[in-house]
Length: 65
View 1 (tube, rainbow, N blue to C red):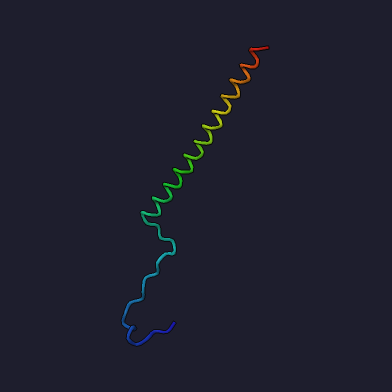
View 2 (cartoon, rainbow, N blue to C red; view 1 turned 180 degrees about the vertical axis):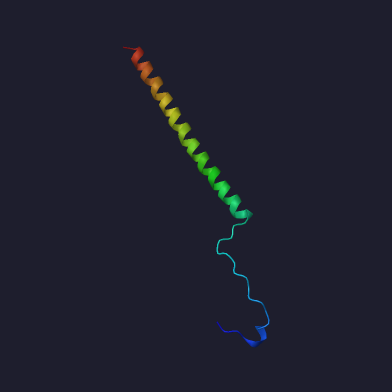
């Protein structure tokens, strides 16, 4: 590292962390988490609807024997 004469009297710059999280990052991660949970709930609801319909069809078929 070369220190030039005109910058010799300036204090060194503070080291900044490479990881800098601001409010926008937190909001994005919260939105992504909510989206993922909502998608999982949607799949669970679809699976329950399918299983309920299957049980009803099996029950109707069993009643006709």
